[in-house]
Image 1 (cartoon, rainbow, N blue to C red):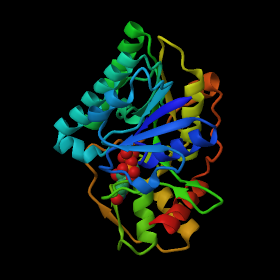
Image 2: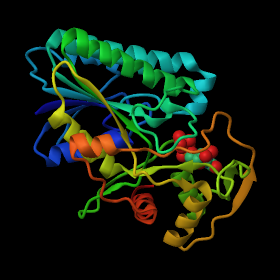
Image 3: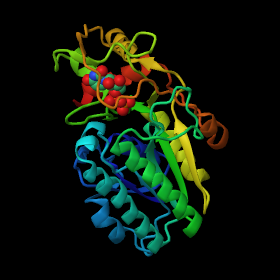
Length: 325
Ligand code: UDP
């Protein structure tokens, strides 16, 4: 297929691009490099620098013959979204609406969208399946849920085939035998695993551990870490299975919850380095515990995550850090 990947210079977008190219697809990456890196765009893809809002209509002409779009380009920082919600509505929602309008005009039939498990908010009943209640706790999650709703309408009214993939905690890296690596690198970094690795490497003095008095077994928050190559394989399966006029949603995780303290312990084991921790106040808006049920993706897509052990996930993230950071 000929595919447009928005955000293909970012973490998950670059990994998916690499695997799409491996599978023989033709890929054009559109990325404004506001948070991504040009060198992260896999060789073999055509790279266009620009914002979705500005460039999608120009790229997605009927003559260009695109078979589908994988839409990763978005702002992803929860804290920033609370401080500047307008940026999230503009980039994540208005940007996607302009993409949909361009796809409609050009007759591009398929869209795979990066949604998030955080649309479910803080639920007591775990694991979280797709039919669990939604209740976003911040503008970031709200912007993703708004797009999910927009896709449902677009599919019903205009025949788009769309899949929203709701990621839980993407982590790990794609490591190639030739030494190239695609992984997580944000500036500033806000995510737990890359921050703990920075502490292990001595780049940061200690980890501020946001809260140890939560109602969880060890008092710290619990997350479902899913290896980025497993997330990527779900995109390829979704692309093959998407049907005109249908919008489907899949929650993607391993179904195992690990506490923040367990993540720190895994980093200590993998790196052999001490990881000083300082208990800090709770992070506003933090979800206590999130674990996915991915039964639907397994049953309908035939998805089968392969790298599920937290130590393997951390080991791959560590190897990426050593190769690239
Ligand atoms: N976290 C932490 N210290 C940090 C960064 C994150 O204690 O420096 C905690 C955070 O409060 C949350 C967990 O790690 O409980 C996962 O946070 P992350 O931002 O990686 O993912 P998300 O909150 O989006 O699930």
